[in-house]
Image (cartoon, rainbow, N blue to C red; front, side, top):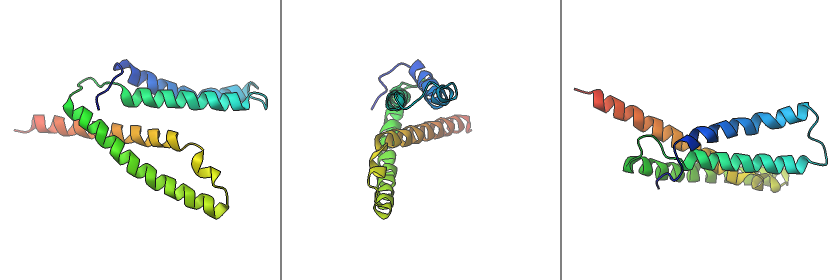
Length: 137
């Protein structure tokens, strides 16, 4: 799976992700969040988080190659396994607490977050391995 967005979208995605964390706090501090618009603020934040995670995961990297596409696919596979474990744990927790809505709140966002973390880890690992292989005598 090759990246479909330009390289700059990765940086923009991280910037949006940081803004999606701090802007709601600032809005609350200045009294902009109240009962009338809470659902819209929450919806907007979730949409920005989704957009930023997709931008990070689907953007190209500087040295995009077949290996990078392989790493992106591997990250999706690992993230799916980790997400499956997370979902099962949340279902068990919800069954114990008799509140099954706990498992269904943000599972898609959690999957994308895990996917981005796996992608970044695998990509950085690949870059380090490539650098050390190049420097070997």
